[in-house]
Image 1 (spheres, rainbow, N blue to C red):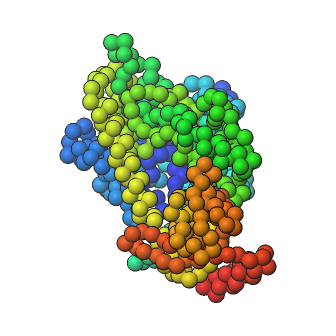
Image 2: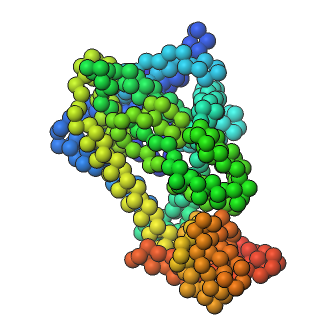
Image 3: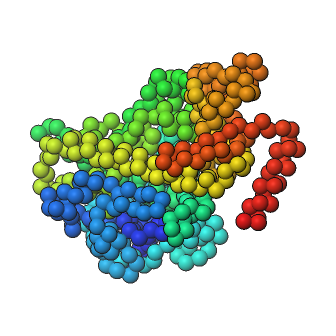
Length: 472
C-alpha cells in the first residue's frame, strides 16, 4: 500500500480493474507490479452471482450503454481500484532491468492503495511533453513498455492496429458525431504490462502436471493462419506491390508486419488490415494449449480483466489453488471454455450490430450528400464503401451501376469489372459516393457511385464540404 501505484483508463471508465505500481530497487532494477481487481474473493464458486456471471461470461459494450457481467456495485465500487482506497488485488510483480529483461517475478494476492487515477489522454500528454504529475515514473514505465513491445514484434508478434469508431451521443442517445479511437503510447504502456502478466501466469500454470498430465486451464489460444485463406490474400496484396512469404508461420508473421508498415497512412491500409485479420484463425478459450500466433506467445491466458470477463475469474481461482498447493482439476473446463468463447462471439456480434445501427442513424442526416470513400468489400451484387470521414459502410448495388456498364465479379481480384468500359471497382480503391438510403430496421446504408470528374471537380466538392461543416 505504501508503494507508488496508479490506474490508467479511458476518460469515461467506471470500473478500474488494473493498476500499475513502480519503484526503484537498491540492486538497480525496477519493481513493476501489475495489480488486478480480486473479483474471485467476492464472487464465490457456484453461488447465484457466480452462476449468472458464468451465464453472461462477458460484459457487452454498446454505444449507448453497457450490459455488465457483474452487478454495477461490484464492478464500479467494491472491486474497482479507485484512487485513495484500499483494494484487494491479485498481483504479478516483476523485477526488470533497464533493457526490459525480467530478472524475477512473484504471483500472489495483495492489498493496494492507488495514488492517482489517470486517463489515457493525461498520460499521453506526459509522455509527449516529458513533464507533469509523476512524470519520472511514467516515462520509465513507458520506456520499458516500448522495449517489451519491440521484443514482441521481433519475436514474431503481428502488429495489427485497428481503428475503433466511437459515437458522440446526445441526451436521447442519438449520434451527433464520430471520433476515431487510435492506439497511442499511453494505451501501449498498459497493453504491454497486461500482456506480460497474462503470459507469465499462463507460463507458470503450464509447468503444473497432475498424474503426468497438464493441469486443465483456460488458455487464450490463437492458431496459425489458414493457408487456403492466405493464398488469395497474398495475391491481392501483390497487386498493391507487397510481397508475401507463406513458406512458414514465422515468414507469414514477418510478411504481415512488413506489409502493415508499408501501408500505414495509405488508402488501402484499412482494407488490407481488415482482410488480413479475416485470414486469421479466431482466438478462443480452450484447455488445449496451442499458443497464441498473433501475439507470438507459446503460453497465454486472460488474467487482467475479471470484472468484465469470466475466464479471468477462472484463471484467478486456478492460480490461487496452485499457489496454495490445493489443485483440484475441473474435468468440465473444456466445456466451460466453449461456452465462454461462444458468449464472447455473441457479444461481439451484438456490439457490431449496435454500431451499425448507430452508423445508419448518423448517416440518415446526410441523405443526398456526396462523400469520398474506400471500397471495403466486393460481392457479385455490388460493393461496399466505407466513407473516409465517418468510417461508415454502405452498399453500392450492382443495379445502380447498370446505366454506366454491366459488371461481373472477379473473385480472385476482389473486384467488379465493366464488360464494355473496362472500369474496375477493386477493394482499396478510392471512390465518391452519394448517400441514397438509410434503413434502420435492416441496419443498412445504400450508396450510389458518383462519377467523379477531374481533380478540380473533386477539390471544389471538398471545399464545399469543408464550408458546410464549418457552418454546422
